[in-house]
Amino acid sequence: MMNPFLFLKKQFKERTFNPSTTTTQKNCTRVHSGISRRSWRTIAMLVLYAVTFCVLSVTVWTMFLSNDDTINITFASSNEMVKAVYKCAYENQDQTVDMVFNIPIGGKTLLQQNKNGVNMSKVVNIRSNTTSHSRDTQTSRTRRHHVKSKYPISLDTNYVINTPNICPVGQEVTYLIIVHSATAYFARRRAIRETYGGKKLFGNIFQRVVFLLGRTTDPKITRSIQEEAFLNRDIVQGHFLDSYHNLTHKGVLGYRWISEHCPQAKFIIKIDDDVFVNPFTLVRNILPAFQNKTRHIVCHLRRSGTSPIIRGKSKWQVHDDEFRGLEHFPFDYCNGYFVIITSDLIRPMLKAARLNPFFWIDDVYLFGILPATVGFTKFVDIKNNLTLKFDSGKKCYQEDGPRCKYVAVSQWRSNQPEQFWYMVLSNLTMAVKRELRVFGLS
Image: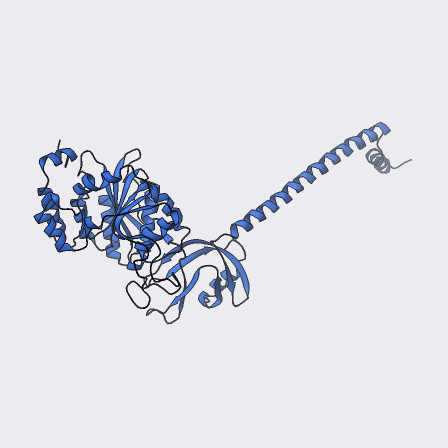
């Protein structure tokens, strides 16, 4: 008699490994064969898509890394080279510039050096179109290595303080005054707001004033500027140290801000904070002549080939590598204390700033190099309507009254802005006040 356990074991093997019919075998084979073919076709398509995506990604990334903002960083300790992409720049108190780069791949050496506390300036060599710069400082025994900004850093860096609603959307702006002001000159900004920069000066002319500032290392002044910006809503501050050699950064910041927040202004008037402007002469005698003009710059003009390029030690020193072989600037440009620009030039000049390396003399860069790059720009010289001599301006306003030809005077002395303002107001006739609806008069 067969053991029941062995019988069950035999039946299990037969039913599991020996299908009962040939039809079932054929059907199963056909079914499994179909599923297998479809699976391999799908897998092949997925592999093809993946390979195509990888090739495109590598191509795009290579193109991205080959632009002007990419540099090669070599580690002297390991001789390893990685690519880095420019992100932003910050200026130090000693006027050197720290530049921040993003390293997409290959940054393990950099991270390890940083963890080990190694002085990176000794192990990193930067190779690019930018210029390496080092300066001895009193605060450090080691030699600090920095990278000078090749182009104005205010092109892309974030605003420290931004006031975007100075020019309301949909509001026609007759003229916008851009004031280049130093951080500590609170009194000058107050005087401008209380005189020719008042928001309610005209009843039928919409005009606004914006003060451009850089950063300061003084915490008290920083707090005061923040309070001033909150109260007056007319401050725009850039991410660069406010200094004489950084006025080009400030000017480009102004072009950028106008393009982003006040493109509807008909005229842009750039002034320094020590200049008094007669707004009544401006709107009655100067601006109407350019009402329908385009690509115009109106200023105290310096003609091409007449302004010397100063080498050697001087306040206006130009490095030997800049304008090499030239003795005079080869283009027209403006003295920057008072400049009128038709607004259609702002965006083109901002774009031109991305094509022209930084040059520290702001008048030459902002009102010479950039317009020359744009091309087809018409300069109009109104130097007879401007003066940098305080006494000449004061005498003109006192003696000639409403016939005084000066639209702008370099006037900064204590209490002088108010005195100039009172003289200008006292010379206005009632007809002019009603014509311009001065202080809402109708």
